[in-house]
Image (cartoon, rainbow, N blue to C red):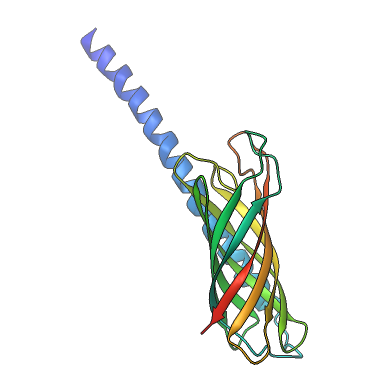
Length: 190
């Protein structure tokens, strides 16, 4: 009888451990899959851009506003710290946004950049949102695949960039709903 009880307890503990490992693997798989898909799309559709934007990498600060209704049906206002690293030979950038409000979320993306003129780029990024802790954020309360359309405008005769974007995080709340937020701010080029 004791051996039977021990086997049952080990089986239940193993099932919980397996569930935790599966959730961790899912988050890692989302992030890696996004990076691979974006890289493959970029390499497959690479064409020379007609204009090379006059600005590149930057770090900036601004505000974030949750457009979607979260589980608590309120719209959260948060601060945002944004960073962009522009690859000079490709129309690709690595971007990260940290949203700081009731909770904290990190949203790394890889974007395909399309220069409109010498001062302006529009882009579409793909990545994941990673909320830290148990509080809700403008991009939800669960790890999710995220799309990030946006625009960067360099101010002439300065090192400043005005940025604006949206983050659409799919299945970002524990109830499975999508989170949408908009961000805007000012960055300093480097």
